[in-house]
Image (cartoon, rainbow, N blue to C red):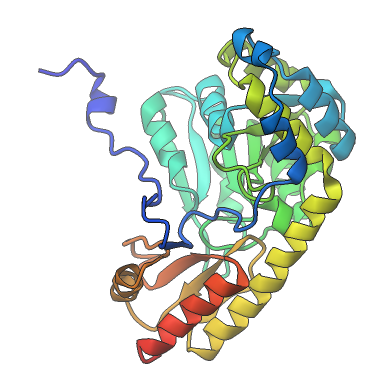
Length: 346
């Protein structure tokens, strides 16, 4: 006997990357930032007033909204705080999709999207990318209530020019959610579209660029009417007091943030060059990871690396079976990866 709805009973849930307890494992599988968060964040955590724990947090995270609005050139009312970027995705699918209101997205992409569609029991319209990961023209013709484009895309690390996203937003009758979880590592972003389109939502995360994956904090940027609608369905206090304080400190430390991003970009370029020398096909990355294509199925290579104490990400699917997604680590971690691959005879 089951107590679940039929769609939940049949659901294959999202499978997150491995989180090993062994501290000696080199984790290059979940796109965490290899460097620590801003010292300002550490200071905030060390000096948390116990009163913040006794009381409920700000329901809308007003102090963070004000700080982020200043950085992005928008109003605080254009921002919603969420428990990680994933909560914003969940809120949007709940708000816009239903059995007769589809979710659409290009594939391959973030594998949480189809899971959210199945939870909401709404149609999921998947439009394949071409081999160069260009934005599919058919995406504008799906009549979906919500269209999601991950940009830069995971797991391909590719980037769709912002003018193409603007054209897509203009063609759509529904909402366009641009998942910019990796935008901190790209040369451009879509935040300026908020001023021109009332159907665009931008997702941002502090997990990648700000080294705060364990904090679980993200936010959305959109026309205030969209933000007000999403606020109606969020949990009453969805972002906790500690996360709000730490997130504010993180986004305000612009110099530390910029320095970390530049270090990762430099290591990304070096890692890409070294992988290419070993025979991998690696397209230009706009993220903090690279997609490395091997000459055959990459599962054996993934297993060998795992046995050697190095975790990368592998998906056994037709479009991804010959590829590994490798997070950009520190120079030492990246050197260890390349050395281990050389030991395999590549």
